[in-house]
Length: 440
Image 1 (cartoon, one colour):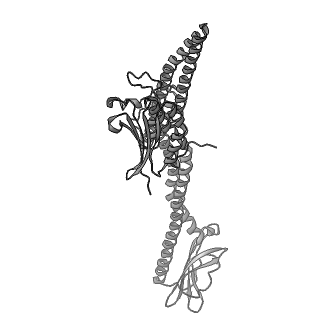
Image 2 (spheres, rainbow, N blue to C red):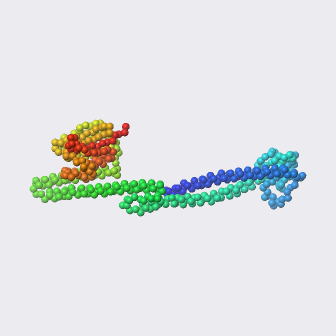
Image 3 (tube, rainbow, N blue to C red):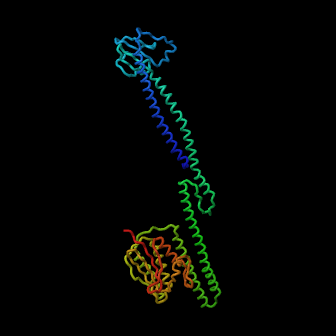
């Protein structure tokens, strides 16, 4: 059963109030009884001394009390001679037992307990007794008078607690109502002025979530728009090439048209593959765990996979150095990173050129480098080429404009820094990916 915060707080506070009331009432009740006992004991003692100072009667004189009023007697006195003769009594009942010693005692007399004070005098004994029931009745009345305000205050406190909780939780209910009334597309921040600190913290967290969600949706909308724009051109070209192939009657023209169609399909397939790769690398998508791996081994495998392609283009592809390097990363993602760098280098390097790959370990971490002898990239554009779908002006070669954007996304996920610079001797391009140094 899911209880509201108000009910949970009430269930927690009301027992505390009740326990506080009991903790106050019980000691008060006991203290009142103790004080009443001490007070009446003092009255008994002083009465006994007053009776002892009075002139002793010469004979036992039973008081003239009507039998109908005798049951209301709750304080009696007696006087004894030293020889055990009853000298005086203030009641018409059988006398209290002859005292054995002075001081306070509790006796059973007339079927109920009585508190008795016995005083030793020169002539004998003086006894003053009071019914214990009368003491209890008086103590109970005094205690109830003291505790009645508390008994009335506890319900009032419970009502005040309920009112305070209702008032304190009102901003939370207002927040819930404001969120429920929002349209699904409304991602603007929730107003957080004049809110309690606890709810303000919650609203700040919600606003942060709304901001990130808005950024993610904006990025997805932009990605969808860019992808639609980029796919429109190759799909239109494929349609035209298919029409040309259908209309061609000359076998050579038909063969050329089909070859162009196959090349267009390959470019479109490459673009779709890059788009899917970029979508998988989205920060909001589920990511695989980063594990320790050998970067030099991975680099050798990637180079070996592309040696036939480089050889077919007349390009010298190889490793200039491969230090034993261990990094923490996603092996599949790092293969894509290095594969994109190698594909770009091979694509833009002319026949007879070189593409070199190196893995270097230094005091700053691990450095992965891919250098080529192609035309390079102007310094003013080396930052923009990491944007999605960006292609340098005048670059008519094949490509989707997503390769370096994917490289940057993977590097960011691994905490690595990617940079572009001129190649050896100011020729070509050198792409560097710096992985941070691992903690020992």
